[in-house]
Image (tube, rainbow, N blue to C red; front, top):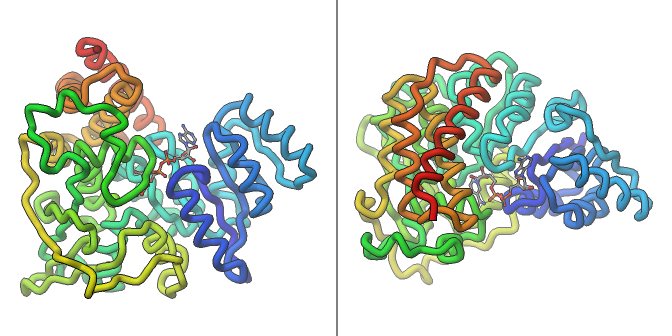
Length: 392
Ligand code: NAD
Ligand code: MG
């Protein structure tokens, strides 16, 4: 029996890589549903190639346009326009696996729907877990879902850990998340103010969406990943460490109680963690090239410089603060990155907006999707105010 897959965010970098892996295995997988925000023409191409039952666009005008084009091209895909369409395709009874590859807190609600419906949930959308925290993990447990990390660091850790999560607490000392350091690893901290969106989006090793590219440049991506790791692997914040490794060959490591360390290695290609999550515990061809050790000059490591990357430490700070603080941090960062990408905020002021928002919003413990969304909205208003005060 083929596995039926829903891909949330199919027109993005992770979505396209997922379809690339799926296309290599027509005997194992079929696409049940696709979703995107605005890219109608690419969605049409994907519908023509993968023939999903459903397609969802984020707004009614885009959905209408897609529906017309699907009809003109004689395709059978139904364009769902209902309120809650993402939740429907994430939890539909025929779906086996859901790739969560929407960017930002916008992906939280369909992730929760997939978790509650007990799906195999392939999580690229780290912001959903950073916002959802306890509520997200409770939905996974109660729904009987299988949560598999797609973020390359967390996939690496998952692959290094014992298969039975019941052993993790007694065997694991700490985890080491590797970080590339992004495009400004060696840039003079006093020149950060002049960085443009184009410079920030030029990542040395990966082609990614614009939001995660900026997060990589500020290292807020790693901050979000520390929080993501806390929930995925049920670790204390102090058990999670970050080390800069510019070559991105080691994707992360687990240190055990006896000081032994296991690392997962490979070429930096997101199709590897995607294939791993799709097939786990089996292994399938991903399309990634094999690592050529003879061609590797060196693997190097260094500590993250707090003057260049002041945001990195907000993760531990937020994890040690009252529950909900990580949701506030995520909302602030989404607003600040958007302001930077649209030319309204200086690069080095992203951190200032995050700090000001954390100061302004004291969360009450969120215990439901509704309370998380309300907290997210409150934090966005505070972040917008902070960004406006610093606007260019
Ligand atoms: P992207 O910007 O390339 O793609 C985002 C996708 O989500 C697109 O299909 C877009 O149409 C859709 N989308 C955006 N906003 C939406 C909304 N409001 N409602 C519905 N759909 C919406 O981003 P990406 O680089 O593919 O990253 C996706 C997620 O995966 C992010 O959370 C990112 O942190 C994570 N991730 C990405 C990479 C990578 O290499 N790109 C690696 C690890 C983790
Ligand atoms: Mg990552």
